[in-house]
Length: 175
Image 1 (cartoon, helix red, strand yellow):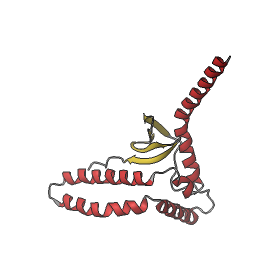
Image 2: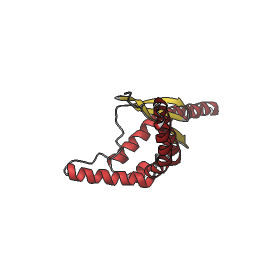
Image 3: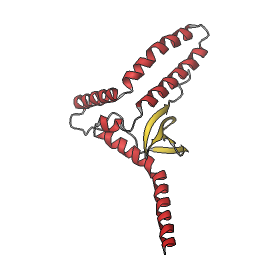
Image 4: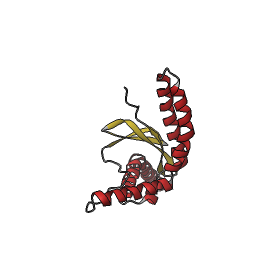
């Protein structure tokens, strides 16, 4: 009898773990979308690992600057990259923060109030229903919009939840 209870408990735990594995990314995206639609910057900020996201964005942007600088044979691209390096870090530090997120929500609310005073606020950071989740490992998944497949948001596991920890920016348009 106790063997059956042990097997039943094991089966229940395994089923819950499998359900968490497949459903928790969708739940996180839904919570982020709901926070954005409610213009709740603090709730949305709870799903963002700001230090990891800042570092990832800096490296992504600087890599794109380096690629563009290599295309420039005149040497001006190197100067531009050096100037961008000095400016990008502090700019991202200010924008990719809880305060930056709150400022974006305030700006979005003000814009909506002047443009569409009777429409319901949709939030500055709308997480679309038209997304695909790509599992990279047990601790990481990527989200991409089906209409813009070249950019991705990277989420990493934090305890039993997920936080936005990086981005894969779309490649710059070719000239």
